[in-house]
Length: 452
Ligand SMILES: Nc1ncnc2c1ncn2[C@@H]1O[C@H](COP(=O)(O)OP(=O)(O)OP(=O)(O)O)[C@@H](O)[C@H]1O
Image 1 (cartoon, rainbow, N blue to C red):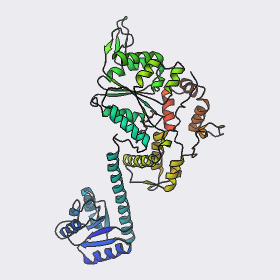
Image 2: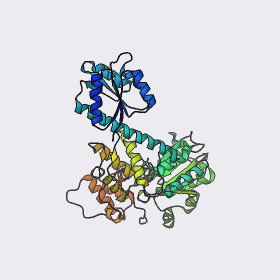
Image 3: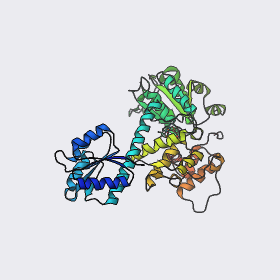
Image 4: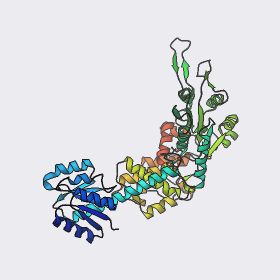
């Protein structure tokens, strides 16, 4: 597609040669001999690119930077003045090219700058559109179920109501908790996040509620728990279904009375926290199995927010992919990139057991491995386009299993009849490491499990 290019050059011979070259490649060209002329031309109409000679009578070519709208400026300079080329880049030129220039090199440089600038413009437009249409910072979603999520966040954030966030692993539960906190009057107080599945059962009570040890020996050790640390703010209990029954009783007391008692201490302490909890488990089922207190369940679910799995979000998959690609390339300092049609089709067909987190990980891996600006299905490496969840079921282990493959196989084979603690022990890792590896490899815990 032809672009509008302005040449700022005082040598008529070079100007004409460059004009002919660019016009042969389908671009529309205007000429200027001084910065003042160039500025006037830019005021008349916008350009996609300005190619400016550095040495001009009067003001140097770099003076056009910042006076030609958002057009990138490519500086031409003689071999002898590479230092001034570097100075030009510092002033904001996108690139420089040495004179006399090679025609192929000039054409390639121009095409590259135009392509990059076009993508940047598109990304800027996308970013501002996202900022307009998504009320929760950094959270993308236009499908009806996500619109309902945003509606509920808006309604309940300002209150002190307890919120229970439900959804499969990686659907964005933590983002919702953060949004609830940030849009509440408690926003300038702490948000304390606790992943109940990542803390060993024996430690969780003292982590949450604190302890006082050795009161009788004289060597007293007092420690504040995370609930107290959240005083005045919000406490987010992720994976609340994993909380042992004893800790559940203390939590209930906190919700009913607004008080806690440190382990080993007699006195009650008043705390003011807003509780947000999340789980991917079926709490009602846990209640039926006796693993979760019914009274606590009712206290928690005053307001429920349900996050749909990624595979049920329709066109949001593409929106999210574009958003996450931009986020990842920016973080990794890469030029703008895009998905091929095949990659988009592969993402639409995939089952996404690890939801948005899995999508984010796949995109990050692809960006790191990519050789150019295209993200292909091979780079995403999504494996089976499994619209059938059964295809993630274990099969016989191949002979040459890598450690990762072994982990995946072992977990998928045994998770139905083993607790997380047992699984971790058999794998020789901590429960926290098991949880983290599940997240990384996109193997969330199954929703339906046998009673422990
Ligand atoms: N709607 C969304 N828009 C943009 N990014 C999202 C969205 N949902 C989730 N993410 C991103 O996906 C990743 C996983 O989200 P998050 O940690 O909130 O999921 P989760 O449901 O809490 O997972 P888990 O249950 O495993 O703790 C995060 O990096 C988050 O920023």
